[in-house]
Image 1 (cartoon, rainbow, N blue to C red):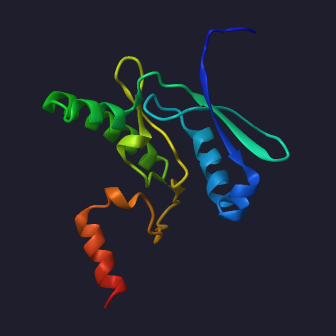
Image 2: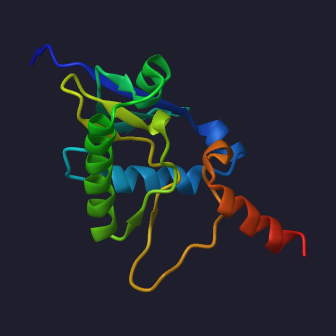
Length: 159
């Protein structure tokens, strides 16, 4: 059936995933994406593979990355910031209700639709934690680490 619907495609080379020990993260990302049903979270529409590559067919967000808009505007108004933070909070609340921890929150991983609503994307570092499970993994983007996190790990590793 022909439609005018546009999708995004994430293409991953299997060889690279194996070399970089990312197979488990990629499988977890696919599993998490398949379980999500929320307007502010990326939807995995299809997943398939060839001998050498994995393909994730995802929703396309015409507004692009929040990072682009922030760079262009320099700053958001208080109302804009409040709106964006509220939607991010709703998305994170939903994830937490599913015992999923989203560990790479940054403007590059927040997409905007044509109406200005957000969509969290890139679940490569997300983790499903059941019950009382904890995660001790230090991950994320160093440029976005809070100063207190940096000092905490500095104290732990350099004592």
